[in-house]
Length: 497
Image 1 (cartoon, rainbow, N blue to C red):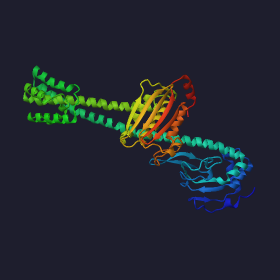
Image 2 (spheres, one colour):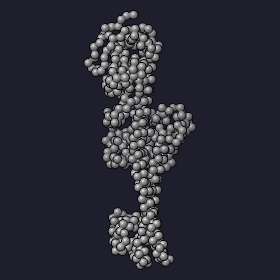
Image 3 (tube, rainbow, N blue to C red):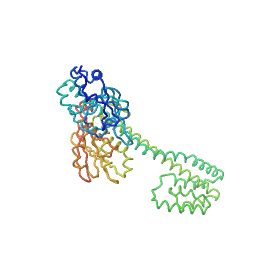
Image 4 (cartoon, one colour):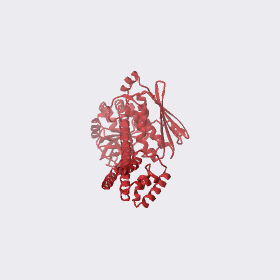
């Protein structure tokens, strides 16, 4: 067997690849390593020898970045030993997408349109690779047809694998953002419920002590009726007072309590009830002075506990609604099978889980969905992810104190959803690429460029279409999904992306 060319065995480090060294190897060793790789299983002996004679063996130290994200790709790497990881830039650092072992092919390939690496590739341990420059691809295609065919099949699988990994990573990041927003949304009602629950024992104790004092006073029936009349004014839902009215009432009642040597702190509770100074004067006339304080304490404690009960119900109801929205958004309690999906419910659930992000930017979310909106057939969690991507992007595009409007109407045999923001619009030179995978106008780490690509894939898989119009102050994304029909049910169940 012929010895390898001198350029192949040269032991001179390449100055533009820090941490990468050349090592001289015997031609027979290189041929054995190449022939053992599954990707070249159909290659002939002549083709294996061609690869061995034309390629360079490159040794790469662990921790070395083989490809930097966004760098120009001019070489093909075939891993002979060791393994490498593919990393994408995300918020807070890099995230590993894939682990590449012996036999994987990196970088440029014949007939591939890849010009820049969409992610970084890092040697996880010491790696040895066969490297062939792009300049040799013409000869490779001519001299090695079996290798070329294998590389084309591998390239298709590589695109599918990498794209699937990026989509899964995008979904995980989206889930992380939603979980963070949900945690903020749940924190307020949960904190309120905890705070109110901790206040109840003290109010109960105060009310019980006041009740014992009233019982010890042996009040007459008419006196008890006077106390009950005041209590009745605090038992029902009081009319709504403005902040200024509440402050004035609290001051008046506090002055009255102080004149009668009663704890003025009761004024805060009594001011929110339908009680005024005239009613308090009538009670003061009906009761002996020592019983007036316990009676009002008992009334105020009962009113405060009823108010806490209402606030507890509101807080826990808010928690229940948020959990229901998340369950509805994710379809977590349903099998992963297609079904009839309510678009209006999905939009409402999506808005609920994104409300915290909108509130942080002072963006108003408005939903207008027709009452007679028909259902669509498909995978509810995937359709909701379309709404999540579109509304999330609209919030990002809107200015502070902006507005995002979501409308849903029936149009013929379809449901049409529009997501409208009042941002600066999409630049003309970006519009042709807006649905391209990995294209994003967001800062590094803030977006993967897969949200709209995923939305388009899901919409197309559900036999719908998606488009947009944009101008400064108004960008509209429009999604059309076919309404429920038997033929649609059958086709969607087989056309999932």
